[in-house]
Image (cartoon, rainbow, N blue to C red; front, side, top):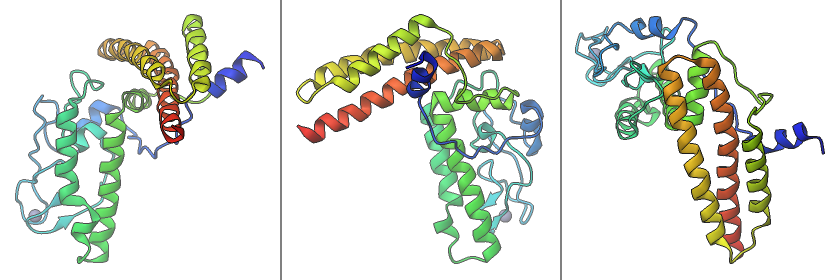
Length: 247
Ligand SMILES: [Zn+2]
């Protein structure tokens, strides 16, 4: 088999999430929803257009007067969940992310609007979908860097070539070994996962530095490395499930 075909099989094939891309650059985006997101705290100061109360989250949702509206403009996933974009949008506090996600879903989940008007239900679905997309994207380092690359005008895709020959060999070897592991050898799978976790953590740290430097081309090359390592991680987890089921 030709090397590039083999590599295409190795690359993790992930369902494309619907990402609503802002049309303006991120820094302009950050000012779009009329609060002051450049501060590190990014707590919200928007007022409800209906009753004038301070809105509890960055969402156009007021639990006090049941005001809810679809997003009227593009907004970054960071802003949507009240997380800081500056100084480094790749750095996300996962505990804070989860807390903001739960707070957001508490007020916009369609179940909470089920007795309201069709317009309100429709808006709740729209806002809730955006909140889910933001959470899913920001919680995965790979999805997060691909999102940031797209925000900065750099597309990523299945055709992206891995340029690191050593890593190509390691990934191919690991994938082959994973597929060959039989029940009773789960310890080897755990060891392979640990080795791969170390590599993923190194690439993730490298991406953090490259994003801080706004070196988007190098960040893209690192994102491709992360995608291949993510492919190994997915394969290990799948094999772990399989050998457990057989055992
Ligand atoms: Zn209100």
